[in-house]
Image (cartoon, rainbow, N blue to C red; front, side):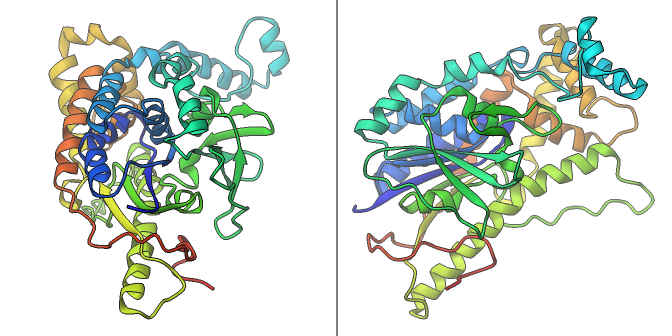
Length: 410
């Protein structure tokens, strides 16, 4: 089939294991139905997934995705998050701020300086280096079969999205997109680009790259559909850990003030889900206009979504709680002592707190072989039920779809 297939994988934290499981079902079907994805774009954990797949190029889709799941199953909590030491350091730094002690003086006596993060993610570097075959990734882009890999991050200076792109000779670098404030930058991708894309605000420090400081791309663009289209994809496979349609949630009891855990969980749902929901809605609306013959400016974009069905949106959070209870309750908690601290940090073990929100937050930070295996199985189960798109992909070169801004524009 003529034209390029793109793969977009959303940010998800530890839920990236779910995405890897979903890819075990989606990637072979994409390859058989359309073609092997050659435009790969992701944010945060999604960037790690697409980079790892680029580094597995030349391997069949079944084998590549099975290996991706295996790599997620090798990651442990203490490899990613230093607990409780990093939380203690952040507390000391914050106390210094409250007492008005200068950061220079604090560093001189061996104490932490300014508060730049709650958790230390520097341990994540060896994981990123291990999960991605960087030499193979660069070779695949330079000589095929991968045309481009894009990693979305947020500029701490401008607040806009920056997509770092390593591309082959046949892929032009897209111009600045003022409508969505997306800037495209040529790069030879490194672990630092992935660490920047995954630098969750407040939890982790921003990362320094050549021209400035960057943090989690999910702040502005968690599911980078438009960059994939701008890079030349004419049909898309999309993987996310939130449903593709809005999910009505149970109302908060009027007599109960939402606590910080509930608000944090809500913020994550908005950041992770709102973008993909709106962009997919726009794609479908424009596809329908093209089908009716009322829009001749755009081409129809086949989009194959793999993620939780709307009626199963809470299953990942429930799974995190179940794995925590069955694998690490009682004396078994000694096998992963960081987990107990982490669970309290996100409200999962705090008395008189709704555990639902704590479990949801835990699922984003639960880097653990048992959770990764269970999450991957759930992702595969959800993706196996994904309906193939009814929109045929065309090779015609017309204007790409205007994601964002509510619909087609001139």
